[in-house]
View 1: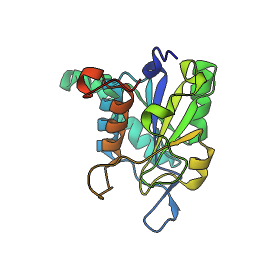
View 2 (view 1 turned 135 degrees about the horizontal axis):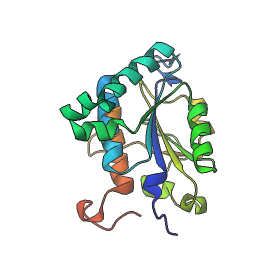
View 3 (view 1 turned 30 degrees about the vertical axis):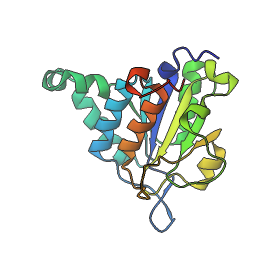
View 4 (view 1 turned 60 degrees about the horizontal axis):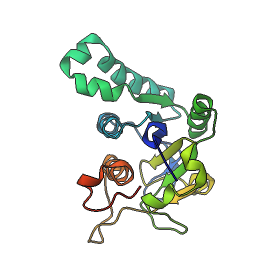
Length: 201
């Protein structure tokens, strides 16, 4: 199967609601400046089509838009042109459903929705297994990353598949979400000469 330009049909959604807090209560987390910038830079590095920040609260969406807008101005571009290029990928949405609709409208095909979780729960796939479906050669791909203590069970069950947690050689499993995004994008789209072995795709 040829996946061609899949990275150019791939989107990341950073979900601030619905997610869990430490007590497994469904909450909306706050947008953070580091997540906006660092995940945008990762998406730009791997050639993704877009990066959505999902938040139901209008004030949080407006804050995000103001931060992003600065880097689209001539002043922001003069400060750091590379950062401006990354921030141009950022879009703001009120819900995951809205993100899916926008991607489907853009590509005329529904996205393959892949949830991620730091909690192990079957059935789980490794990054290279996520793309084995025959329709990955045509449909866009949407990767959902939850903030807080992760996506709700509802959205993990709604997704087409679930990507298993990132594991290191220790039992410590508390990566920042922006770090997890970077690792997963590299496992999916990193060049083989940098990946110490045969390219997974």
